[in-house]
Image (tube, rainbow, N blue to C red; front, side):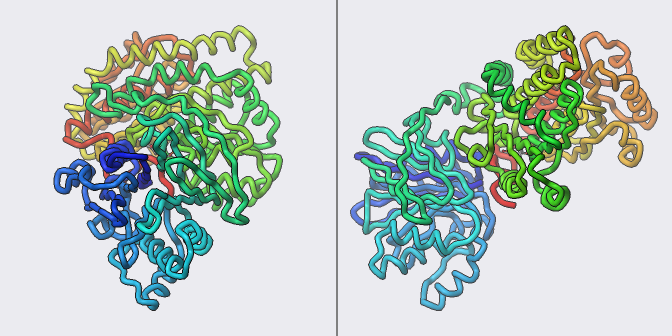
Length: 607
Ligand code: F6R
C-alpha cells in the first residue's frame, strides 16, 4: 500500500523518472500523488489529490529541477485524500521532505509533543510527525542519517521511510520496519522504492533492505547498517529475473487483461521450479503433525484449492485459515510440530505476515509460497517457493493466483509420491494433466474470451449474483465472485452449492444470475440437483462445464466450455479463467478501470 520512490542521478533532472516510476507503482494506491526534488539547496514540490495522470495534467510533475528527488502515490489511511494529506510531507522550514508507507501507531502523542514545541502541522496524516522530528534532531546538530535513526527508534507501528534534506543534497536516507523497500543500483544513479517494477527499466540490480535497517544512499555508494546497534551490513546486489517489458501493457488496454493472457506462460515457468525445492516443501508438510494454509483474499482461495489437492493426491489433511483470524482462533493450540504454509503473492500482506510470525513464536515451521524474491515472507519462512508469474501490476490477482495453484499442485503430486497412495500410473496421469494446463488455459482464453464479453454485456447491470461450486470448485466459485465484486462492483456471493439452499436461495427470482462451476468430477450429479433447484426459482444459469457435457449444456442458459483432460484436482486453474474474463469485461463495460479498483491496493500492509 502506497508506492514510494526515491532517486539520485549523477546528472540530469530526476523528476520525469520519478513521475514514470510512480506510474509503475500506481497499483499500490492512487488517491493522491506528490513529487519533491532538491535543487540549489531548496525543495521543489508538487502534489495533489487524484490519480497521477490527472495531477500531472494540472501540475506537470516533470517540471521540477534537480537530480535528487522522492515521490509517493497514496492509499489513504490517516486523513482523507486531499492536497495537504498527500505526500511528501515537510518540516516547518521546508528543508526536509519525507515519504512514508505504513502506519505510525503513536503519532497522536508525538504530534502533541511536537505542537507543544511550536511545530506547525499542515496535514491530518501520521507521517507528518517524521519530518518535524527530524527537524528537531537536526537543529541539535544531528546529521540526516542520525536524525532518521533516532526517529526510527521512537516511532511505533510499521513503516518504510524515505527522507532527504536540503542541507545534505545528493543524499537520501531510508529505513524500514514491516513495509517493503528495495534499492536499485546502476552506474551514476541509485533508486529506492517499495517495489521492483518502479526502477526496472533503469536497472535489474537490486539490494535488499531488511526490517530494522537504515541505508544512506548517494550516487556512488549504498551504506547499510542495523538500527539496533549500528553494525555495518555488507550486502551484495542480486540480479532480478523480471524484465522491464513484463511490466508494460504491451498493447493490451489493461494490465489485468494482459496478465490473464500471460497465465499459460506463468504456469509453464512455475512448472520449471526445481524438483528439490518442491520435495523440500512436501517433506515439511509430510513431517508436520498439523498443516495450516494461511492466506488472504485470492491467495486464500488458492489455499482452499490447495487443501483439496493435498487431501486428494497426498492424503494430507490441511486446514485453510484466514490469516487475519488465525490469532483469534487456532493460535493458542499451535506447537512446534505444526507447519504453517503462507500463501501470498506480494509476500508483504500484513495479516499474513503477522499470523506467520505468531505461529513461529509458538515454534511452528513456516513454508512460504510467494511471487516476490526478497519480500518479507521470504525472510520469515524456513523454506520458500518463488512462483514465476513475473510482475503482476493489475490490482486484481489473476496470474499470481494461477501460479500459486500450480505450485500447490506440484507439492500435492510430490505428497502423492511420498505417500505412494495414488499409484504410479495414476500419478503419471495427474502429472500429465498438470503439464497440459498451459495449453488448456490458452485454449480457454482463445475460445471463451469473446463469449465472456457477451455474457458480461448481458448481466453487467445485475445488482447481485451467486457463484456456486462443490468440492474444489468452491474455491473457483469464491474467486469468480471476488473478482467480480472487486473490479466491477456488482454484489456477488461465492458459496458452496450444497449450502446455497440453506439461505442464499432466498435471493433467487426470475432472471437472477447464478454461475455454476461444474466440471465432470464427483460433484457433478449433486451440482445438477442444485442447478435444478435454482432453475425452478427462475434463476438464469451460467455454467462453466467440460466440453461435450451436453446434459449440463442443456440445463444452462449460457455456458463456457473447458477442454477435456483436466484432472479434478486441477480444475480451478482452467475453470476460473472464464470467470476472470467475465469480471474484466463487466468492469470495462461499466467504464471502470479494472487495474485500479476503488479502495483497493495491490499489497495490503495494514491490519
Ligand atoms: C484479489 C486480491 C487480494 C489479494 C490479498 C492477498 O484480487 O488481489 O484479495 O489476494 O490482498 O494478497 P497477497 O497474495 O499479496 O498476500
